[in-house]
Amino acid sequence: MNKLGTVIGFTFRNKVRTKAFLITTIVLAIIMSIAINIPYFIQLFTGEDLKSGSTKIGLVYAEQANVAEQLDSYWKAQNNDEFTFVKYDTSDAASLKKDIEAGTIDGYLQFSDDQKTLFPSVVYSSDEDDGLNAVAQAELSGALQAVKMQVIVQDSLTPEQIAELKTPVQFNAQNINADASAPKANEKDESNRMMEFGVVYLLIILFFFTSMTTGNMIAAEVTTEKSSRIMEILITSVSPLTQMFGKIIGMFLVGLTQIAVFVLVILGNLFMPQNKEVLADFNIDLSQVSIDVLVYGFTFYVLGYFLYAVLFAAVGSIVSRTEDLGQAIMPITMLSLAAFYVGSFSMGAPNTMLMKVASFIPFLSPTTMIVRIGIGEIAVWEIWVSILILVISILFFGWLSAKIYRTGVLMYGKRPTIKELRKAMKAYKI
Image (cartoon, rainbow, N blue to C red):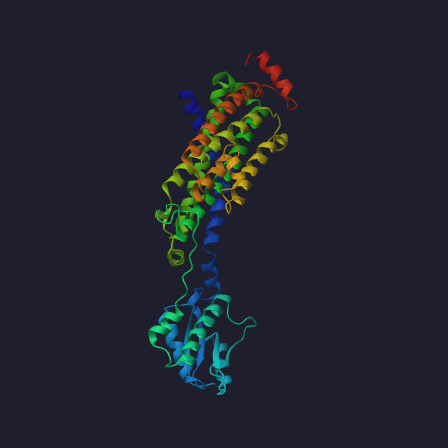
């Protein structure tokens, strides 16, 4: 046990001190920081206010003062900062254009003075070809529609009736096979669902990132030690099995350290003063995330990592040159990609037969089970059967990888075939 701890500590310290690890971590942290602060940098260099409420629209009262007044009052009552109105008593085009060029307003809204129609036509003028952005245009159209109704009905309806007409129709869906009297335990509101969707996707990316990066590091380190003949010295002091699992656990801790650094960088940037307001607009509430999703997600993440790690270590032990490593680990890389794609592309349909079958395939279950637990429907027994299969697979492939590792680390030259490995195992009585 002491030797295992020594190998773990040596692997961890040796890897986190390398220039490659430090440079990669620092560069990725800088990229993340820049990406999170892009809106602030744009605002800093352009001097523009990027908040959605920065659009200022001139509202001309000259031709239709009554309609303009109702529109202004209606919009203020909505308490919406998508845009704000600036009152203009004059309809002088030259004066309005001058204010647009000076940045006082982004454009102006003007009503026609046609008395033949019940509601005047509306024109928005600005110095941009595309006019208002899509969101502001939709909001303005809704406000104008509400004012149009008020103008047309006038005193024909009571304020209560007008308010009722403005209220959107409630639309609900129900399952005809469900018991109407039974509580809908599986029904989640939209915010909870979006939060869990994000957590599931993050866990899938985390698994793929860790399994690929640390797996490649494990295989590369074993191959490097073998090609430099350091392995012949190590093998005399520490057993191959202790070496293999020591490297796997050590690399796992390296991966967790890198992830922890990235999490701290992301949180540190998000809670900076210029980003707090943007973060508040997303209404993120981590209490909405189910504990089951986090616990089971971490469980499958760890088990999936060790399954792929033992395979990477075994493959690294049979390769004598680092130039041949990429081709040797290609099958494992393809398995990891398959797990990522099946899980991520099935997030929109987590209860398909493909996902149910993949949940019991150990190379795919780390991602598919996370999806089904987080945003699908799954029985508890399915979760534990999948975990049991994954644990048995780790024990089997760990045992097989240990046998290959013991043999492969002392075999030099070209990459041995399966037949040659079997002969060597018999010769070494492994």
